[in-house]
Amino acid sequence: MTPKSGILLLVSCVAAIAAVGCVFELTSGQPELGATTTSAILALSIPLTALSFWWAVQDTRANYK
Image (cartoon, rainbow, N blue to C red):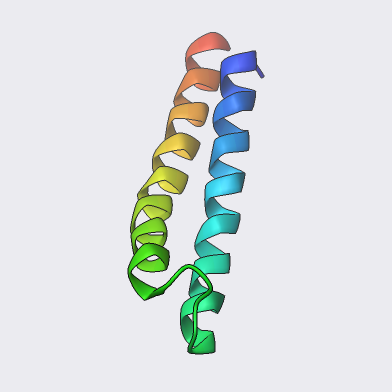
């Protein structure tokens, strides 16, 4: 694993945790940051999770061929 891959995996993990937290906040009925802000964080964290994971895998594959 390269440092770039490690950082991308870290970003992916943090974004996934944020997405799960947002889902719990929204289903609780009264999100602390408000429904709009929490929904925006959720909408950004889902693609960020997938993209940063994909980029990490691609970077690792490129460096180990």
